[in-house]
Image 1 (cartoon, one colour):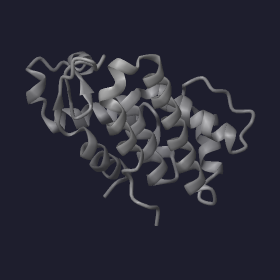
Image 2: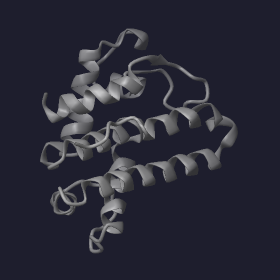
Image 3: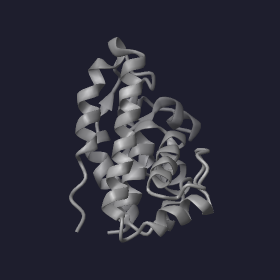
Length: 175
């Protein structure tokens, strides 16, 4: 199984169903793909019918390839970044990666929300020795983001907080 397929399998566990919650600013969503993203990729049918293969195409193009996750030397770190990007967008996921690397000692890394050669170098410099540390750091910053979203609008986010917390604990222990 490729690293991409590994990441997709885990993300689909959380994102495989159709959702159109009135408090979700993403609106109608299937496989973690919002209607706006699907339409941008040319999907014209009802979102409840969005095929998994169409979602996989978007996953590859907008998340995996855009974040250069094939260049990350850990399938667990790549999968975590991918899942975070599908859940909260590539920009916030990239910032979480950069903040995590800075916390782990890559002090000169700029937090700009863009995964480029410097960010990839920072990530890979921590691997494999600090793989678990980086993984937990990524989850920590993801948790902080969820708290910030919740606190900014508790009434509209209350329905999502338990699912967000489940998402933080989904990936298997690293071998």
